Structures are given as structure tokens and as C-alpha cells.
Image (cartoon, rainbow, N blue to C red):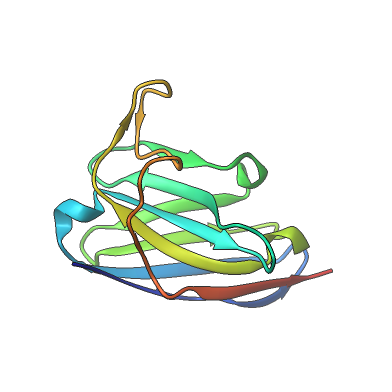
Length: 130
């Protein structure tokens, strides 16, 4: 069993910043891949950023590259998502996610966003106004 608890959401104006946190616990083998997903009203959930906790591999969706940073504090078992230069289209509920280690042979990286993330937190709301 994996437990994920997000915090740090809020409302900001365009160009602002937020940092999301995700406290993780439970089966460590089931969370070698960790990431952030988001869902806007009326849209499907989409991957935002991910990382492999045993290495330096990360993955970002194109629209957030250069603006978002994902990091992990292993001592605290906490995953972060630093979001800068926020845009209205970043609005949505953000979910922390975890999954077992999975290698993407085409991308030659671990834990890309299209891998099988099996556990999700309850979500935290991010609203960006123009």
C-alpha cells in the first residue's frame, strides 16, 4: 500500500509561482517512479512531471518544460513540484502519483510519464487567473 498526501495548492495570478509537496509512505518498491499529474474540469488527467527516485531521470510534458521543476527529498520522503511562470492553462487539480520502476526503452529513461503510475493522492487545487 502506498500513501500520498499533497499540499501547497492555491490561487495565483499569471506569472506567479507555487510549490506543491507530496508526503509519501508505504511500500517503497511501489514508488520508485514518482510524479505529478493534473486534471482540468472537463478534461482527462494528464502527466506533468515525473522522476526515478533511484537515479536522475526526469520527464516533463512539453508545455511545462523550463517552467516546472520536480525534485525529491529522500530523507523526508517528500516529492516537490516547483511551478514558475504559471499560466491560466495550468489550472487544475494536481495529483501526486507513484508506481514501480519501469524503463522506457524508446526514450532510454526510467519512469517517463507514460509508464504505469498506479497510486494517486487526493489532489490539490491550483488556480491561475489572468
